Image (cartoon, rainbow, N blue to C red; front, side, top):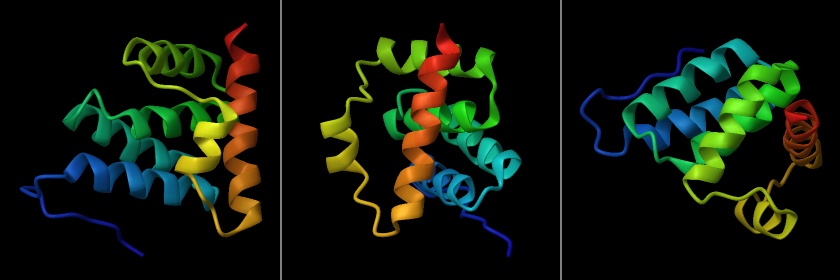
Length: 112
């Protein structure tokens, strides 16, 4: 299935970040990365795209991306603390919640 958005849509970064999350949760890491890079290129201050990039880095085992994404997220004032994640990402599918949290934890471990 092709996922596209209108190029002039005012909130294109939000759409790209959501498509990135969807691809990430479906295990399509390369396509998730494409969407998240586009979201960040459109709006470098998109915290949700940055959070999702952190999770992607962890799931992909990409230490360089994990360090960069965590650094950028923190510079923007973003957080990954559990209460925030639980409130901001109310996944209805338990597998999705586990995948996302596993990616965040792995990225934090890769940072060291």
